[in-house]
Image 1 (cartoon, rainbow, N blue to C red):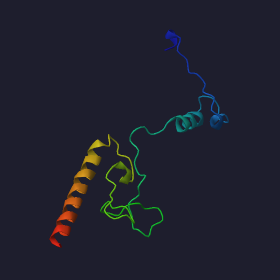
Image 2: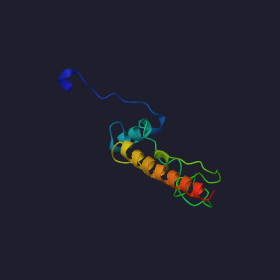
Image 3: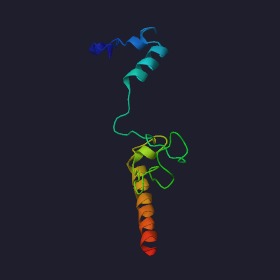
Length: 111
């Protein structure tokens, strides 16, 4: 790379200024400051009991306190997968469709 004239540019980020340039701590800080998730956010709708302060949905994906509203996407996943989130989201959607169909079957039978 040197033969091409390439060099490492120092990035001025206030949060990382206390670390020596190119040290391991510097790079860890730069990575933490400069990286962010993109298009694969997960975990924003925690699953858990209704009495939990932080949970949003129950194990059948229903939103606490709102009848017949479900969350069916990657936001219910507690951690991001090591690969693309498409396949797990398809599985969540398949499970949700079964839950919804069964709920409507029970409702129709009781009428």
